[in-house]
Each structure stands twice: as structure tokens, then as C-alpha cells.
Amino acid sequence: PGEGNGAASDFLLSGFEKIEVLRDSAREKNIFIHGKIAGQEAVVILEKTPIREETLPEIFKDSRLELEMKNDIYSTYKLQPPPHLNEIKTTVVCPATEKHVKKYLRQETYLLEESGEDYLSITLPFIQSQSFSVQWVYNILEKKAEADRIIYEDPDPELGFVLLPDFKWDQKQLDDLYLIAIVHRRDLKSLRDLRSEHIPLLSNIRKGGQEAIRKRYGVPANKLRVYLHYQPSYYHLHVHFTSLSYDAPGSGVERAHLLSDVLQNLEADPRHYCSRTLCFPARADDGLLRKFKEAGKV
Amino acid sequence: PGEGNGAASDFLLSGFEKIEVLRDSAREKNIFIHGKIAGQEAVVILEKTPIREETLPEIFKDSRLELEMKNDIYSTYKLQPPPHLNEIKTTVVCPATEKHVKKYLRQETYLLEESGEDYLSITLPFIQSQSFSVQWVYNILEKKAEADRIIYEDPDPELGFVLLPDFKWDQKQLDDLYLIAIVHRRDLKSLRDLRSEHIPLLSNIRKGGQEAIRKRYGVPANKLRVYLHYQPSYYHLHVHFTSLSYDAPGSGVERAHLLSDVLQNLEADPRHYCSRTLCFPARADDGLLRKFKEAGKV
Image (cartoon, rainbow over all chains, first blue to last red; front, side, top):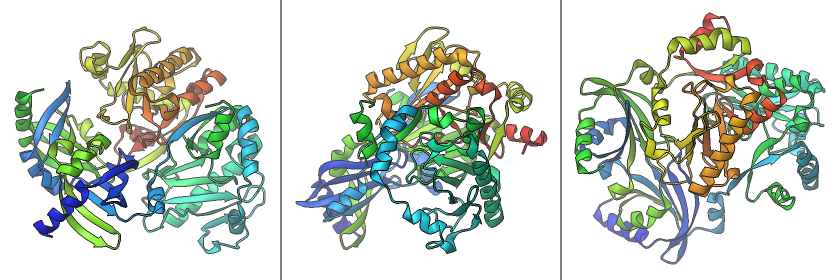
């Protein structure tokens, strides 16, 4: 595209009227903005481009540099590279529908602290009132769905589980390996229900899952992160297996509980997960957050 | 810093000779480069800065825009914003040791399990043999460096700490808020040294840090992730405060330990961190991994 396009485009965005920032990521250096262009609804997405090795010589040669801080052998600077080496990828959706806007909208997240009593008086009634369907889980366990995706099964009704790839993993590379072990027994909703009597079940999942992943994918146990979520996204006990080198969504300390810690906690105190205060993140639109607020706990 | 600093700094990097790219991330828009500055070993880290909402009007008004693709309601562009709104955060370590170079080199990662005995027989001797310098920490505590960056201090020699922004945070937006609390006392190396007698210290850090962050940045406690690393990157006790909405590097369950869990663990068992098996990720070139291998633990 020549100057003509450039000029036309300039006009397009200079007339952009921001309504609100839907989402942004300081880590990924992007921002999603809802607004209007010439009276039409629009979503504009800006994302900084990766730093390319082949541009480094020119960046080092032609940038403006300003010292910010110096301490011992460490110093930090603000660097202004030549504009053509430092572009922002821009995506415009226009006219955008309400669905586009909602798709990109990020909700605020709050860290809640749930004591054992809070669980019984707030969380458990909430879970029961929602009657979240886990029919899709039962379909898997009964081979009515996704049977061809199961990579390992231990059919024991007490200690058994099925292991299958998570939907988020396309199985095309091992970098972002992500599998889920789903237990056969149906009476355990989450981490909160675990007691020392479940140690054999959990040990079996750890050992069986690790072994199956080593056999199938060649990934050894010490390259896996094995954990449970609290709160889980569905209330039928399951365990996550992700590649240690993959910064998997939901593997942050505020939501993930390493299976090896869970086992040690249950060995030290059979009722650990009954009595302990657990932190978990809740989105602003989460019904559970509302319940905690109503109970004066936020 | 004025123009003088700018000019001097320009010279510094224009003479940088690249040896190799140690690591880069297309997701995070950063690159870690090993090279030489005026004959001295150096590591230079470039990372693009997050896109700040308040700069958007100027970006939309004054950028050069070039159309790349148009399909139905979707179009993409290359945008060149004004240089002062599109800086690259630059960190220079010079002179850098082999350790610095190794630290930034992308490596395979393995999960190790360290029992309390492994700590005493393998890890502790290794830490002592390395005699990692924490002079830069003492410089901060003694106000010999970075004194202007301290945002809060509790000067008590037993319970006190200083709170300051982490190097990784440029403080321009709250999305990736990242502060570190460094304790004044010098006898605590890491999580492993914590006993129930340190509960007052840890509670004081949690409360004081949260309050200081709320006052200074308006971010409430329930939007913060407060945790320790194990292994830490330096063996002088410190606590991380990051924005809950920021997927901070090092906040994964394999390395981070929520301060609220640490407090509960110490209340339940004064010697929890003395006796418990702790998992931690170790890179292939980590001397500690070698020691674990030599001891037949991997």
C-alpha cells in the first residue's frame, strides 16, 4: 500500500472515539479498545510486535537512550528506537457487534479467602443451587463421548480415572502439553472434599498419569506440573498435567495446588482441606463473588 | 537525567557487540542478548513497554498507519507511533559474569523434589559454596542505592522491611504492578529458614506491604498476589507483591508460595518448612540440579 492508503488510514483512526478499554495485557503488550469510527461501533486491538534479532544492530546504532537507574553492575534505560523498527500491529473490527465487544471484555478479578466454614455456609450451597451439569464428564467416563481421545484408563471404580488431552491442547507439539485426569468415582467435587482416605486415589492418579504420559509422549515426570484447581471449573474431581515449560493458563499460585503438596498436606493432617483457609480468584461477574459479598466477606 | 546522560548512554550501546541471543519471547516482546561493551562482558535485555491507556489519544492522532489486510469487517494495519510513546525498557548488566549469562540463557527446566534432608545435605552446602553476593540488597537496605525508589519502609531491625518496585516494573501502569519487600534482618535465606517465630515478621510484611500499596497506588489487598519464591533468585528473604490480574513471571504454582499459605503452614506446624518436601523448577544448567544428580536424586 502506498501513501494513499496511509493517508486514508490515518484519517480512520484519528477519528476514533474511545468508549472503554475492554482488556489489556502488560505482559503481552496489547490493548483491546471499544469505540466508534465515523459513528459506527468498532473494536481496535493494538499489540506491540516482537523484537527481531536482525533489527538489533540498527536499534543499537540509531536509538535514543536515557538513563533511568544505576546500581552496581545493573543499569536501566529508556530506549527510543527508530519508528520503522518499532511498530504496533493494529486490528480493527468495524462495524463491531455487541458479541465482539463482550468477547474482548475482561472482568476484574478478586482474590477471595474461603475458610472451612465459609465453604460450608457460602460456597457449598452456591454450588448446589447452581446444579452445574457434569453430564459431559459422565459421557466421557461412560465412553459415550470422546472415547477416541482417551489416552489411558484405569477402570477401578474406587482408584481409577481416565486421562485425555485438554481441549486447549491441539496435540501438535509437546511445548504446551496439557492433559486432564478425571476420576471414575462421582462423590468428590473438589480439593475441599479430599481427606487422608483419598491418598491412594491421588497417588494412583499421579503415578498412572505420569507413566502414561511418559509412554505416550516421551515426557518424563520431572517435566510435568501436576495440580488441581481451586475453585475448579467443574465440580467433579480432576487433575491437570501440563508441561513444566508451558506457562499454562490457570497454573498460577492463586489457583493451582500441586498434587505433591496436596498429598503431603493430607498425610500431615487428614482434615487439612476441610479446615484450611483457601485463596482463590473470582471474576467480577462470578455468582460466588456476589455470595461472598452478601455474606460480608469481601 | 538530561541530554548529557542521554548522549553518554547512546555511546554505550552503539558500541555493543552481540555474541548471541540468550532468549527471546514473541509473547512478551523481549529479548536477552549476551555481548560486549567496551571489551567487557555484558547482558542487555530489551523489553517493549505496555500500551498505556492515557497515551491512546496521542497515538491515534499522531501515528503513521499502513493498511496490511482488509476482509469484511476485519482489517489490520502497521502503526508507527511517536517514538516517545513507544519506548523499549532496556536493562544492562555490565560487567556480567558467566552466571549472569547462564541465568538468562533459555534452558530446559526440571522439577526437583527437595526433602528437608536434601536441603541440609545438598542445597545448603551448595548455596554456601556459591557465596552469591547480595551486596546490592545491602546497598538498598543501607540507602546506598535506589533510595529514591523505596515507596515504604518499616525500619524495625527485627520486623522491618523496605518495599520497592521490582526492576521488571516500569511503574507506568498498574496492570503489571510488581513490588518486592526486602527484610532488614540478614539471617533468613529463604522459605526454608522460616519457623513459627517468624510469623510476626511475615504478618507485618503482608499487612504493611498491602497497606502501602493501597495508599500509594490505590490497589486493594484483594487484587494482590503476595508470595515467596522457592528457590529464590537471591538468598536474602524477600516477598513478591504482584497484581492479581498480571500473569507475572515466576507466579506459577511450581515456584510461588502464597504468603497466606506460608503463615497457615507455620501456625499448624512451627517446623513445616524444615521438614516438608518442596518442589522447585531447576534449569538444565543450574549447579543445584547437578548436585541433585550427583546425589542420585534425579
